[in-house]
Length: 475
Image 1 (tube, rainbow, N blue to C red):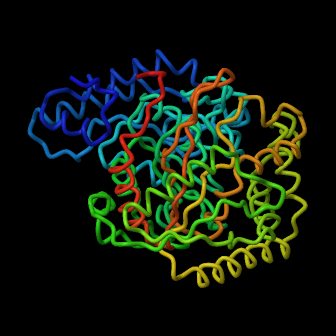
Image 2 (image 1 turned 90 degrees about the vertical axis):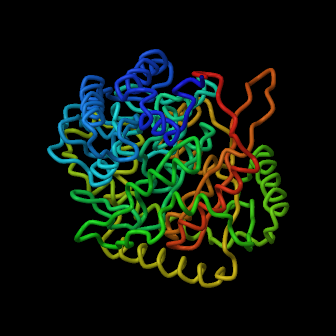
């Protein structure tokens, strides 16, 4: 029999429904894996083993009585430590918040639990989710299970590491500039950023900038679709709500897509940055695959202007500056956090309004100009997973930021445009004497609101190119 942790969430749910395994057995199996591997990985900030087992026992009792239970009742998952969880500490990756215990759940947490998933705890994230790599002063870095000397990416790095190492089959993450797709690429899994407004930031969060939103990390496209199906329900008062999808995303993943027009480019939108040979090779392989499936693949120049970057930074840093951090607490923050806080405090109200208007007007014009294409294809990252110390080894936050741009010059533009985007683990580098084989993701983006058709294409690619390679750690 296949090991329980090797099954995706759908197959785990099938075993639970048939009675071949109990929820207690399944949850304990994954908790044992967390205990065995997480000290190496740094995937979790907090593990809620007692609460998870108590919930698993309740699910088993309900099944034994013949009660109706959700499809995924008893399947393990985890929540990113940026998302509020009632009664469970939510540190946001900061020592400043190490004892913060929310009184309410984030809406996405409520909905995932309502779908039956059982949380094993809170996954690692950089301080306040500010970085494209995951490290903090609470538990240290999250590492990709493909090479424990390399960072898992960020800011959902702990969640991606947990899924890739098979500590959980699926996990919730969030993405304000690439934070689902970056770690998905580094860890060799699927990371799906939904359209703007698809997942509510409520009840206490805000979508004021239109950049960030929650989404799924998984090892299969159908699991990503199912987790987004659970989360994709608006709350009253949402700023940009999209209605419940008329067709479940899982159903879209089971559909064969029509012939699509695919625009492709590999040149980053920022000057002076080049994609690595590995990233370009993955992108070329994917282009050939899409053409072989009957899609029309067209070379275009990168349509995103470099002037977006400073405007994005004004919005990004203003969000940090709005955090209620007293001056006397600044010394406990990491240098990178203080860097963005200071930059945000220097942005004036008119500058912030201008930046938001520029992002909206520019991406609207771009989407209009690109309306004849169904999908965009780029590398996910410009570089393979990087050593843990690479980003901040200089000690200079400005150099840290420069290296992050060298690493991830593709992802943030899709947050600015509000479109759905997915990183698929379509390539693995050759192992060398200096490093083992490493995963390299490729990114597909769709039209605003068309998450379903993007799932259809991603699932088609997975059927042809999968099953995806698996890291040796935790097989």
